[in-house]
Amino acid sequence: MKIVKENRSSILACVISLLLLVFFGGCTTLENLENETPPPEPINLAHPFTDVPVPKDSERDQSKTFVYESGSGAIKVGRLFFSTSENLIDTVEFYQNEMTNQGWTLVNSMAHDGKILNYQKEGS
Image (cartoon, rainbow, N blue to C red; front, side):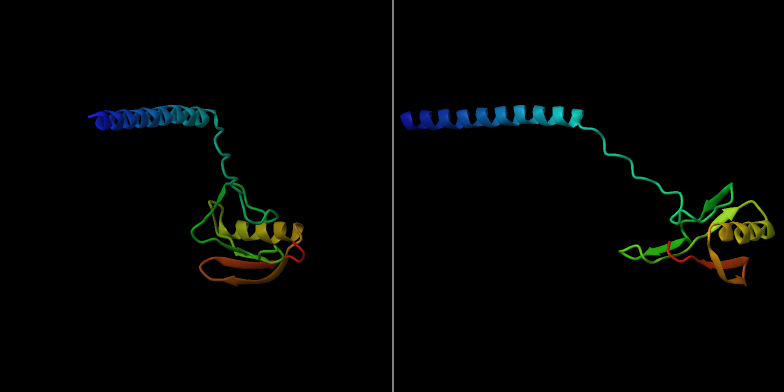
C-alpha cells in the first residue's frame, strides 16, 4: 500500500507541475502576443517600371500584365496592359510623347485589336 500512495503522490506532483508550466507558460505567450507589433503591410508598387508614364484615370490589368526581371536587375522586360476611358488616338499620342520624354525609344508599333507600342531604354 505504501508504494501505491508514493506513486499517486508522484503522479499528482507531476500533473500539478505540468499544469503550472502550461498555465504560466501560456500566460507569458499571450502577453508576448499582445505586445508584438503587427508586421508591416507589403509595399504595393503602382507599376513595375517607375519610368513608364501612365495616363490619369487608367488602371493596370494585372491579369494580362507580365514582367520579367533578371536576378541582377540588369534586364527587365514586360508587357503592361492598362484600361482607360480615353479614346485610342489620345492614348497612343500620350505614349508617343511621354515615353520619348522619359528617355524611351520606339522600337516598333502594331495595330491589332488596338495598338501595340514597343519601346526600349538602355541602362534602366
